[in-house]
Image 1: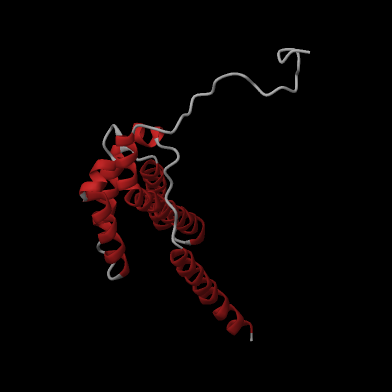
Image 2 (image 1 turned 30 degrees about the vertical axis):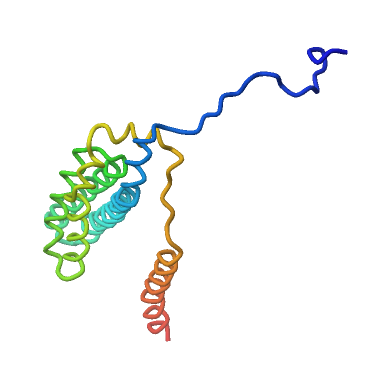
Length: 182
């Protein structure tokens, strides 16, 4: 029996060693990956803000007895919520128009003193910095597509802080409910 007739013989085809993308594209991506991950996190923040605004819109539309006032406020919150969700989605996709919309939304968010000022100041830094401008350039999606192996790894410290924050939010909701039930 020859090797060609043996179905259990190892393959004889030559396989090229594909080591990855263009080294220049990989260097650009590695230099900007942390900033890119932060901007995509802002997109998630806009998703959450948009969902909250839509929930508030429903509350105004169905919860206020003064119907014209409730419909007006509900419509405003609904438009802002849907716009925020759209901007968040496009920020995560690194679309250039979303950068401009994010800048406008962050400028408006600066008026939410003190927490909103801090968060939106950081968002403005992310979107207006040199790295932020680079991430939204037309050739950057091709760099991302050429370097799928480059991933951002979140630090364990960040996960611990997020866990503590989540527990604090749950406690802030649960403790008053338990106290009211007594």
